Image (tube, one colour):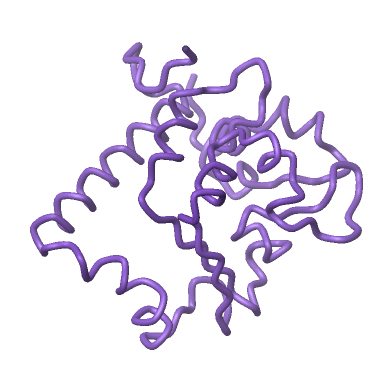
Length: 174
């Protein structure tokens, strides 16, 4: 039986570096999203993510929701320790390119941005500086279409990660 709390609760996003085995066994959402389970790596997911034209990762300097705040950039603690946050480039996710982040970064398509403020508290000025330039080159209709496609794709990916796609394979492991 589907239990929403098993898939959507904040605990579905909790990764404790000293309990990695438990996290990989018990957490259904985040390990799938990050392509962390070696036996279940999804090459199509990686291919789609790495095909982005640009990826702007915004870290909020006073974030108390994401711990460590560097997770906004895919940085994290080393497995087994709460010491010394690793930069994104130092993580296994990046080095083994589980989701295509390294591919994007090496192609110069990732922008690591740090802004003042708390979680998701981005100022209009920072929006104009860090987000609008990537939208300006597109026509309004193209932006609307792109946003609709992104939302649809994200929805499909989440449904598949949660096992709610009723047998429809959206992301193959080929």
